[in-house]
Image (cartoon, rainbow, N blue to C red; front, side):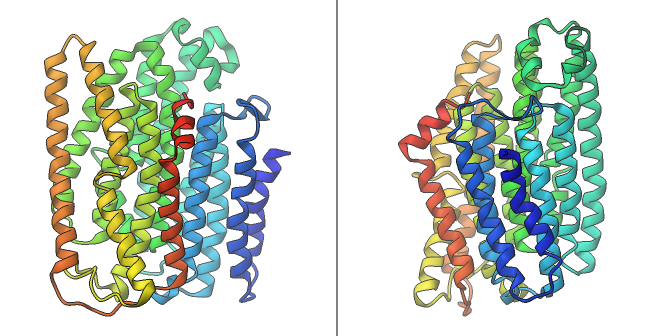
Length: 471
């Protein structure tokens, strides 16, 4: 019954997307809003809650990620109402976007709720393929080129994940048989796996596939290129929802890998994420437009989420995850106003706003820009406090304490470079260049207000308590 409730809004959206009536866009928006209700209802059930036998199971982590993703989807829907005021989009392309968004959401539900490695992969593949077509709704040569690039990179990433899953399954099959595909049983019997080395190899390969899909080293630029060529809502979905499905897979796999061999897991992920942030920090320093800036910043934050998770602070990782999921789509959607008529000059971009809508927009975007670099009272400020504290605590129990502390200091230097760049850009946007008149529409303003309210909700005591009890 619950699975039917979760899938019905997406199926309704898919069918309505074929209607050519002008009022269809209101039904499409309504279906996006309705997605939220069954997810909220999931919070009332005792966890873990079996949705489809042992294959789809809702626990606290799944429910939290689904809730965050549905809020992002609603924000994107609000902004879609006025997207045609900033870019050229035909009614056919608008309906096509929703058609593949529906398929994307179905894949996301299966991927996030899966307790089975095979179903997780199928859901992720479905979300990946549907995103290719959402990129192509922008009928430009650049968008079509990047859609094919995404198809290639996505195929590489999901192939690596699939191969890693096969190796992890093979490592545990002697003791679990066909049930070696289930996350919960793998976690329960992790220390009994007869071929731990085979599992670690499988985990490393699958993790590289997930990292590639999130834009980590060595493929740091493909994500920025795709988001630059897509419509703003597509970029918002990439940063706020698609990466949720990828990172929850990493959470699931790494929980098992921690039980198999925590030291090997930590060293591998630590080196990989530090290398990614090292490259991204200098790419951010050289960024010349908003979409690339925000996209590269998203890679940095996903690397921090992964790092906090393996450092033993799931609370910091999940708080940072929620803050990133709300902040980054808000900034991508704001870009639709900041870059009106395709002009993406950073200097003076926060000047020229008049009226109540303009003033509210100016305040919210300034808030988001300062929050994304973890200035208090941003949730990211507190998540980084807890996260770096967990890393130091991990260093205390390590045989290489001085090396670990040195690595943490190096990471802080890289984050300082990113901090400096964002502050410099903010000053240029606020005080330099010519003021050009820009119009802010109700849909995008309500989307930004929704994300601002969601960020505040993240800092409520009940929310923080819930996040502390997730793992």
